[in-house]
Amino acid sequence: MNTNYLPSGFLPIVVQFVLALGFIVVTMIVTHNIGPSRKGKVKDDPFECGIEVVGDARTPISVKYFLVAILFVLFDVEVIFMYPWAVNFKKLGMFGFVEMVLFMSLLLAGFYYIIRKGVLKWEE
Image 1 (cartoon, one colour):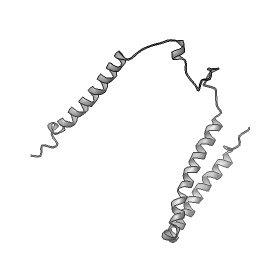
Image 2 (tube, rainbow, N blue to C red):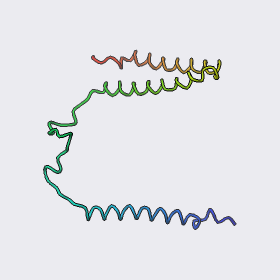
Image 3 (cartoon, rainbow, N blue to C red):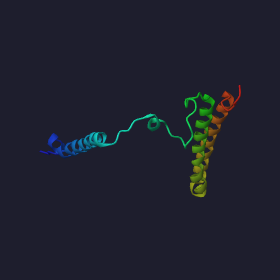
């Protein structure tokens, strides 16, 4: 009978997991109890390059900004896929060319959709 699938076969893994978890818990408790804890207005004040805090950091930002940022990252990553294709253009032959034409057509279809939806129009 194969004993590797019995619970006793997993005992070393369980022991290592318990020891690791115990080490983490003990370390957190000990460092919290023996570490210095000075509290005060100056200590708790956020520090930003020596500049005094003015106003609220949670100012509303337009969703258009995030849409443009996400679209930039999306299309930037898509362009990265063109470099390996360009390097291996001769080796890939006609099959690679057809794949790139399909890839570019889907990419341009997405770009056309974005233009038609007016996502890149900043002022409305």
